[in-house]
Length: 356
Ligand code: GDD
Ligand code: MG
Image (cartoon, rainbow, N blue to C red; front, side):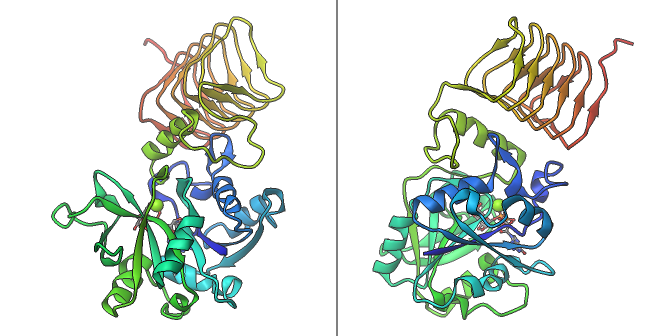
């Protein structure tokens, strides 16, 4: 099986973190997010992956190259203007077509250990045109709602249902298997949405669209709160599948990268991650669930807890960071506080605390 990953969205809900990078490239527990999807697909023997891209195409090509490093072959299908989710799938067709094999399609912002092998077997057994992977969610209103019958056939698809329409808790996980024939039902070169156009239309035409629900870890990382929670889940060991070469597994571990300078009076708690070349000063505290990127400098007596700090951040003396997300290159002043829910974009500067 080959795969298409949709990575052409702008990641607006994750701003300001996505102002300078794609959502699929944000660091997730120290690795670019897409590496998790590569690892997942490889586990299911998918080695040829097409990234369907739109914004910042050079950035993404430079970051992931041929894919060799991750044990996969990457192709890039680039849009001149956003084609919507189905248009983007169609635009990648040339790299996956030519056989009778079904194709795995993934939204580029789902963190999961989905069993694509089982899903593909289910898809074949049911002779489906498209199989949609489902997850149970208490509040389905920010997802695609999927209604299906006792034979596992989808009967209705409602993208972002209102509270009144939300008559089920099963939502589209953004993970699909497409039969090659499904590509012929998408118009070429035009903007077309999988969720708002393709799925409702093929259902109207009486095509066989199936619903596959498995027991999986699944989370979309598209908002700051979910992005943060995904880190906590990884640190708690809830995601067994990690990128190639990740040198740590399981829970209750503090992973410390190479060439770090950690003062002997600093207090470090697990679980957490301290990236390569970090410095932690006297009596500073790196509390539980703190994730530090590379070359982060934590000055004396600063306290960090449950926060995600990207590369090259400087945390001033005595500063307190709790429950926040801090973009690359930020400067946090002395004794400043960054509170739960705060999201700082790259290079933000928080001044020193003054009692004036
Ligand atoms: N190439 C390309 N071109 N990719 C796109 C485009 C486009 O025009 N528009 C969106 N994408 C990519 C995004 O980068 C993302 O990886 C994926 O398609 C889904 O877009 P989102 O913007 O993240 O959609 P969503 O989160 O609101 O909803 C989708 O995901 C939910 C699950 O997380 C839908 O598929 C929902 O039905 C689903 O429940
Ligand atoms: Mg999304």
